[in-house]
Image (tube, rainbow, N blue to C red; front, side, top):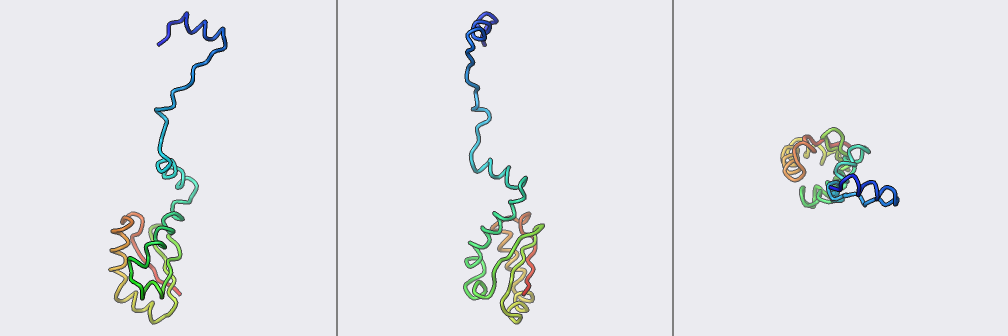
Amino acid sequence: MKNWAESAVAEWRCYREGRDTSARATTIRAALAALLPKLGLADAMDEQAVRRAWADLVGPFIAAQSVPDRIRNGVLHVQVHQSSVRFELERTWKAEITRKLAAEFGAEKIREVKFFG
């Protein structure tokens, strides 16, 4: 730390040392992770990740018959093209799909799946 005389001379010369920003430095990932919820865009990022992984998680047949639409309050809403497929998904596959999504993205992000269409 400077003594008072060095500080006075530096101030008289209008010399300012650069600030140490290393304590405030962060990664882009960490900055976005903190910023997106404040902007209300965290769900949008999650939705894109679910859309990219949907076919791998549910298989080609179900992926061809359905599209993840949105995530609201931990509920993934999935549009299904045919009512007979929607009935089968609700009755047979809902628990398995929910389990896979929770394992992939976290149970706090996706805790339920609702089919519509």
